[in-house]
Image (cartoon, helix red, strand yellow):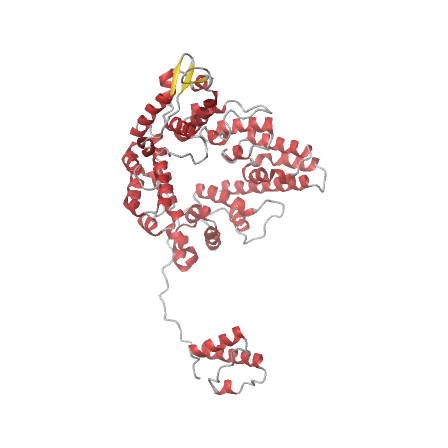
Length: 520
């Protein structure tokens, strides 16, 4: 049989794409092709293509023999309980799901994190589906690769879609860290994740790794790599960060300055402390404010831009940047006052005429930024105060969620529960997002009560869609009976009835899911 040449096959493709009226049929390449009836060009094209396909396959040579790969290394971890394995199959979509629950894909991260914490070995049949899921969702990769274990790393070279497995760091589970390979060849997000993980376990090694390629990194990448140094930040990083103050990128300079300002013993922190003393002076029971009149070269090198990116007045901008970068201990040590006492001290202009009230909000906002930056719980607690009463603005506009993150998980949940009890869910989305999950029983109870009030007031569920999506993942599963009671007490065939029924189903699903993982 005469083989089909590449040109002949290309001619057939061209005729199919352009049409037989614009591209004539190719000449016969064999006696069989010559016998094709060409009176109907479209039919003849299909016949010729069929003959050519048979000839191509008939002429194909067998692929070279390959050695059978060695089996995957043994995995000595305890096997995943059978019920948990069935649940994973549902979450991965390989088995039918539960129609009355939320989007199951949103529950997969929680399942993976708990299963990884237990150190389970997955059933081999589920490993490919899990690797496929993590390919599409990078936030799953660390847990997925850790759970896939030796079998996952053995399978990875067999499928190009799973190449991320060899670049994903999985410590501290005792699995291999790809280290230099990941840093040199990984995607940017993978490199940042790797650097962040390394900084948590070995800050000096993380700094050395970043320094080894710093000069060749793009400016936008250098900014995010610097952010990763927040983990394990110490005086050992000061020399590197001081050098970064001279970087050609203003964003890199600003980020380096912000990190240095969180180190109380750094030279930059000392310089900012001196500037803070020059702009704020405590005397006669008042804080006398003297905003900077210029942004000199030294201030610019320490990360203070000449122009405000927010459009604020220059003097207000410089003042806020200095106050936010100064160590918070400057204020308490120099005045002998607690954070709560300082917040109650009135502000005045430098000439003492009482006209400094316009600077009070700037100073409070700067202190809030400093509390978040320096992770100072005493200042965060003082700035938050008690949850504001209805009709009153927060004492620190825009900052409560960030300040909450400085406090312990228990304090965050307690403050947010009080806020929800007073204000409902309308302004609680960011506050709830700052709380550790699953939410504590008091916070969960407050949220369920707020949902009940919202339904009784006649609002629509979709007006709380963000919080409702969060509740499906974060409410304590123990609140399922209370939510089921809400569903039973709500008028049937309404949006709220459907919402409560769905939420209750999700809570029951999560309750069973977590119980199966802990049963082993």
